[in-house]
Length: 155
Image (cartoon, rainbow, N blue to C red):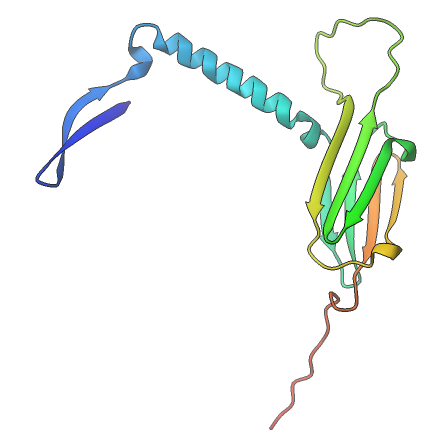
């Protein structure tokens, strides 16, 4: 409901109250707009959501684990620039014939995901492996990024 107020002596007074959803066909229009918006929003996020990620750190390293079912090492490209880690992938299984999908939930095509790492890592010591549909990237922390204990002195 849309409330329109006018002010009298700095006090809001109800001027008129409209419910645009019930005015001459707007209900159908709003319902259709909501449906289309949900459809567009869900397809936009489908590729990113299809490859879930865990990013965590231990005392010695930052680790990224990403589900990449159906992808091999040749389908993945990983780059690190400063604290920006970018993972690109491409999943294009060869189609033997023209297909008409009734439901399509398996992501196809390319994707790219960039994450900002929480700590400095040694770029020349980063290791990535993919096994059983799980990409694991181990990134040793720089000595500055590792947690250190500080001794407390009594005075």
